[in-house]
Image (tube, rainbow, N blue to C red):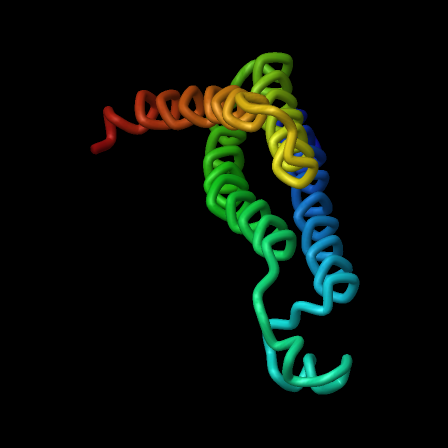
Length: 146
């Protein structure tokens, strides 16, 4: 597999995206601690009392960013892995993976820092383009076997 340049590129960008998701999870935990907004009563009791078993808008923003990652990065992982098996041009594949990765990073930054609209929406849309391209190429390659 490591001889497949496209798969190696896919692995690199996928790992960056997974690490980014871990960072968002850590940020969510830090915001919970700072704002004393715990999702579980036992955590609230350990950190000051049941009054801290509550929701907080900043924690919820982090959670939405993380959920959005899961809704978009997991399908990318599937599409990218299958696309890598189609023997695409390595440079074109790398562009697909790079655009998605950068789009998702910008989307997360825009989400967490509450950047002015439409920054987040544009980043989302740009990141979807390579996914649609890969999905279309997968469908075109597999249609004769349907």
